[in-house]
Image (cartoon, rainbow, N blue to C red; front, side):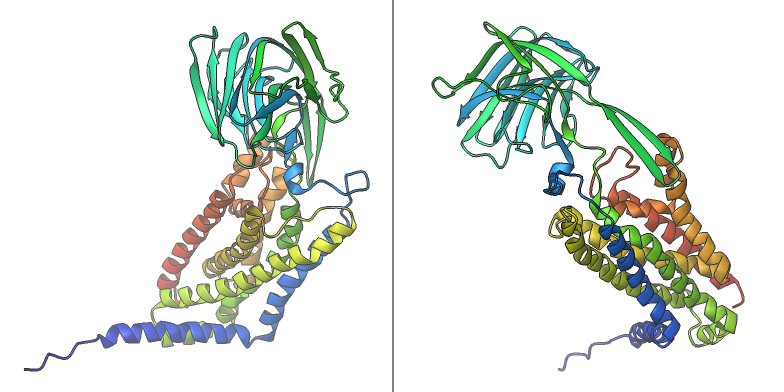
Length: 478
């Protein structure tokens, strides 16, 4: 007895073949119109041109040796640090008896670092007048912890391998665990001791297209007693590291000692530099110009057929109009994605030599955050093209559709520079312009939304516009 022959649906196969033919037909339309191909090339060329002009106009903010690498620009590592060697695993203990100056976020406490050099990995346990005891690491923020207990307060940091654990106590007997962090990138030898740090007073003045940021250093002072670092080297002296140009230097200025009591004074913070320049995003400034060509191409890809009446022929050969729109979206999105990737990678590679010649360290393309911004820029232009296509189907006229899309993408970014910071953040969060957040590589004071969350907002607008376009194209006469 022979087994029955397997059955394969010809309906599904024809449907798949039919959509493939639709994709091929839309791709053929696009590539056989010279103006459209030139528009796509222009989008890449404009992005690269602006990137080169921006790089050529950059200047070093250093002293002739170029700026610090991006990782150094993006952090503050200042304050006053008084330390001794810590050999292997060990503990540093002290009581913060008082704090003066600096406000609610003035920091006084203990620190274990891989070295005294700026940018070294560290773990810091601190007392703050307004935010309790915090455990901080990685230059990413003000740390975890909480409570309202300020000085006087006992603090203890314990290192075991790459794990550093912080404890606090009101009396030096009953200890509460604050938390643990991993201190990667340190060898057996480290340094440990006391520190003070405080934020500068920042004033931001915003105008259309520009902003002015000024910082006024603020000092803070704290007193410590019952200080111990163990184990440490026999006879090792206390050393000091202060803010560049500040009161603390290897000679101990900014620190006084009376018996077992230390008084430290200093200024400058330890943590992320929320006013750092985002060199990667600046390199992609040309995308704001290049997107104009992408939007125009996406709109004309639809409205040209409306104007000539050829869309009726397309719908006659493919009655399922939603599939036609999907094919158009895939084709225009894919070619815009490819153009965006070419423009983004080209901007990074071509601007690098110009930045170096001006003494500026270019963003490293192999860095995960920078690479995300590059790939995200390509995806950004792809989604913008699909969004413009959907708006063109809704409006059915070239000039109004291009105007609407560019206004939604550009006006929020321009208007935000003249609005109060809280209003500017909401404007950039709730409009399609949020998609440009995917280009961010630095967490700044004016960041409205995270990179992927912002890209998600743009995708949501695009999905809503596509849904409206499909609904309307099915109800209207072509």
